[in-house]
Amino acid sequence: MRQSGSTNLESVQIQEDVVLAPYTTLRVGGPARFFVEAQSDQQILEALRFARTRGLEVFVLGGGSNLLVSDEGFDGLVLHMTGGELQAFSDGSGGLRVVADAGIEWDAVVRLAVERDAGGIECLAGIPGSVGGTPVQNVGAYGQEIASTLTRVHAVDLAEDRVLNFARGECGFAYRRSRFNTEQAGRYAITQVEYRLELGAKPSLEYRDLSQYLRERGAEHPTLAETADAVRVIRSRKGMVLAEGDADTRSAGSFFKNPAVGADVIWTLAKTAGCPVEQVPQYRAGAEYGAGVVKTSAAWLIELAGFSKGFALGRAGLSSKHVLAITNRGGATAAEIVALRDTVIAGVMERTGIRLEQEPVLLGFPSQNGHSAFR
Image (cartoon, rainbow, N blue to C red; front, side):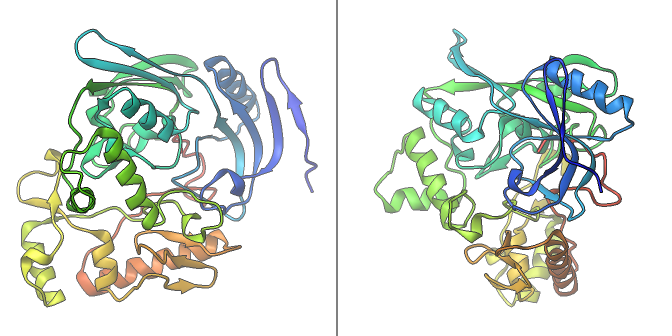
């Protein structure tokens, strides 16, 4: 059996056999063979040299909010990005320039923005995780996404040991996608992100449940801060905001992506559900999907397939508040999470012919080792 310990390098400490479950919002997963906490480019490069001399795979970990770690853990080195600085400056042309280090909590950025009356990310309030993960997934909710406000990503190239910057147009953004989780997944450790927000902008009220919530409370013309607070309440009701003592928040957020389907599929779904076509959820799909394609609700499909809130297999279950989240009911293993995932995917496929795609990244599973996107 390996002995736990640590190795001190010039600017970082390499720890051994660190259990990863506490570093994820699912609270699931075994140990990392090596583990290091880093903030700077220099610390990352030093840890990278350590890993390379030992032939280790590297995984970059942020807030752990979109990650499922295997029960066996990860036989490589985990770079955990922590802390850093959050700064904001007027750009002199009606915008607020926000510069945030990767380890900063994402919701702290949203709070800073609305305090400065800067719009563009108010609907992304309450999303768990850290800044470094936002460009990886092109994080989005309630009609907004990171791609609309991000201007620069600062990163370390793990393949070539160099520091570089990406402008928005170089990030390859699409729905829940970027160059950092597709063709170049695992190549970069993001250390800083810059956003440009609009001072004095009106809040985005594109989604019906958000606008309805505000209207019911008499907020016909809500401020950015009121909108962000409303989003947090709505997310909390769905178990999508971290809260001590609430098992529903031991999750990776939305476990399944909303699928893109042809408009004709909506008619088929209405027939399957026995409802008018206008009652089938439909959302605007990105331009990358082409004409005649819309998004539909993964949660609606899951319920159509017969899975209700709270459905469970062993210690893994669907949230009691929202079927889109798979939760750790207490002591769940990664194997139990995967079994529930596969059961839901199979059930939706059988009922609707649509195959759901999961959002969380897998670490330590046979085909996923070394996928080092920032989570």
